[in-house]
Image 1 (cartoon, rainbow, N blue to C red):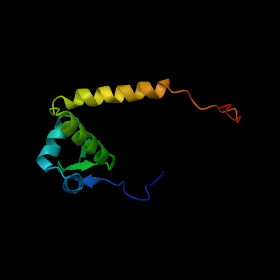
Image 2: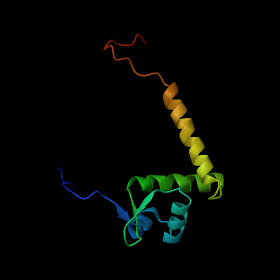
Image 3: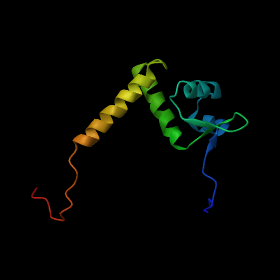
Image 4: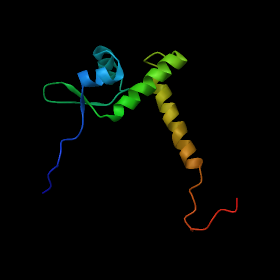
Length: 103
């Protein structure tokens, strides 16, 4: 049997709102649209992984830069993730032979 040495770092809705500068009601709406990932505790409170701060920054950049509606954001985010995955697959893996490149 193993025990966690420390509780995982999670952010409450209020803390997340303060860090991102976004009103809690809008955050709840984005969670309901599956634009943000959050977990619910037994009391119904939302808790966020710290990685979701970067997700909110991405949402805000797309919303302001491209004037997208919140309902269009899931499609755009999905397409951007697919493009990033295709680009990762396209890049050749670095050689593991230990030799130096001729360039």
